Amino acid sequence: MIVLSTLVSGVLLGGFYALLGLGLSLTFGIMRTVNLAHGDLVVLASFLALAVTQMLGLSPLVSLIVLVPVMFGLGYALQGLVLNRVLKDGMMPAVIITFGLAFVIQNGLLMGFSADRMVLRQGTLETAGVTLLPGLTVGVLPLITLGAVLALMAGLQLLFRYTLIGRAFRATSDDPQIAALMGIDPKHVYALAMGLACAIIAVTGVLMGMRSNFSAFDGPIRLIFAFEVIIIGGMGSLNGVLVGGMILGLSQVIGGALNPSWFQLTGHLATLAVLIVRPSGLFPETIDRS
Amino acid sequence: MTLLHLENVAAHYDQFQALRDISLSVAAGETLAVVGSNGAGKSTLMKVICGALPASAGRVRLNGQDIAGQPAHRLTAQGIAMVPEGRRLFRSLTVEDNLRIGAYAGRKGPWTLERIYQLFPELVKRRDNRGLDLSGGEQQMVAIGRALMSNPQMLLMDEISLGLAPIVVNQIYRALPDIAAEGMGLLIVEQDINRSLSVAARFCCLMEGRVNLTGPCADTDRKALMDAYFGVSA
Image (cartoon, rainbow over all chains, first blue to last red; front, side, top):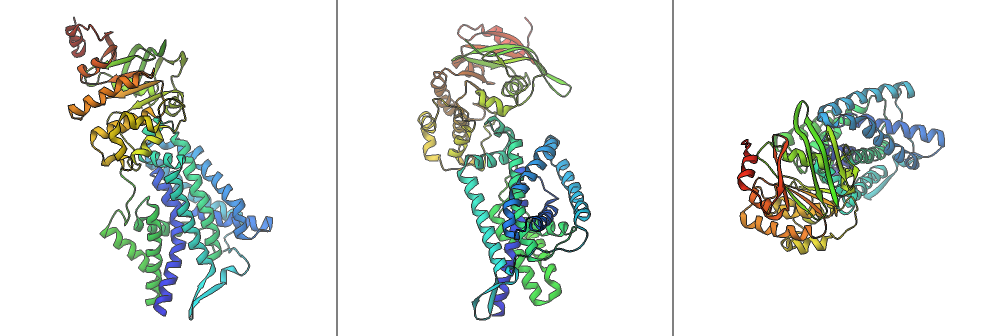
C-alpha cells in the first residue's frame, strides 16, 4: 500500500508540474523562444488571484473568471507591444527581455505585496481528500489540478487540429514567412499564443497558490521545474508535457520516500538522465527550421 | 486591363541594391515569364511584389492601387499569392491542412479543395499525409494548390521546376493554362527559359537587377534573348 500511495501521489504531483510546463511549452512550440519570466508570471497570477479574492470577496477558483481574461490581455500586450518588436533580431533579444521582466515582476510584487509568504484559501478544499481504497486517500485539489491539465491539453489539441486559427498557429510555428504569404499575420499569432499561455498561467497560478504558499521570489524555482518538465517531455511537445510532469513528480516522490532529503535531487537527476539519453526529450515534436 | 504594374521599382538588402528601376506590367489572364541568370534579381522581384521585401523606391500597383510597403499578409487578402522557391510546405500540417491554410485570407473565388483535387488528382490519396512524406512533384502540386486556395488575382511562381523530374515538370506545366484560364495574372520565374517561354505570352529578362530585354514570347529573337540573359552587350 505504501508503494501504491507513493505512486499515486507522484502522479498527482506530476499534474501540478505538467500544468506548470504547459504554458512554457506552448510559447516555445509556437514562438521558438524561451520565456524566462514564466515562473514569475505564475507567481504574479497567484498574487493577482489573492488581490481579486480580497477585493471582490471571491474564492480563488471563482476568481479565475476575472483572472483568465486579465492574464490573456497581459500576455497579448507583452508579446504585441514588446517582444514582437525584437523578432527580426533572432531569438536572443526576446529571451533577454523576459529575463529582465522576471526581475521587474519580482520587485514589483515585493513592493506591492511585501515579502511575506501568502496562500490562497478555498474553504477547506486544500485539505479535503477522498478515500479511494482503505489506506489510500488522495487530495481533492491535486485531482482538480490533474483534471485541469487534461482538459487544457485536450482543448489545445482540438484547437490546433480542427480550427483555422489552430492551423495558423502550427503554420506560423513551422515557417512564419510562408505563413505570412497565406495571409496570416505572424505577430498577431504570436501575441495570441502568448495570451493563451498567460491564460493557462492564470490557472496554474491559482492552483499552485492553493497548494502551497508563495512569495515574490518563487518564480525562478517554478521556472526550473517547468523547464525540467519540457526537457523531459520534449521541447514544444504538448503531450510530452504530461509525461514530463509525471516523470518529474514520480521521481521526486519516489526519491523522497527513500530519503526525505532526496526529494528534489531525484527530480533533477531524472531530468539529467533524460538529457543524457535523449537530449531532445521523450517526444521531440518541434521540428527544426531549416 | 493592367492587373499588376511596377513603376521604377528599386529594392535593397541593406547597402546592396538588388533591383534598379524595374518597370513591368501583367494584365489579367496574362502570363509573364521573368528570366535571368543567377543573382539577376528574379527572386527579389517576387519578394517585392508579394510584400516580403519593401521596395526602396518606385510604385507597385494592383488594379491601380499602390500596394508598395504593405506587409505580405495584407497583400494575400488583396489577391497576391506566391508559390515559393523550394515549395516550403508546412511540415507539421497534412496535405489537406496545407491546402486549407491557403484559404486563410478568406477570399471568395473558383478555387476550392475539390477544384485543387481535380487539377491534381494524385493529391487525393495523399490528403492525410504530412507534406514532407510526398515526392518533390507532389509537394510542388500542394504548394501550387495552397497558393490557388487564396483565390488570387495575381499568382507568382518561383522556380517551380527546380529539382523535379522532367516528366513531373511537364505534368505541372500542363496545369498552368487551366489556372490562367480563370483570368488570373501569372508571373513565372524559371531558370529554364524554354519552359517558361512555352507557357508565357511575354517575357522580361533581368540582368544585374535591371530589365534589359522584354518582348512577346511567340517570335523571340533567341540570339537577342541569349545576349540579354548572359549580359553580352549588343
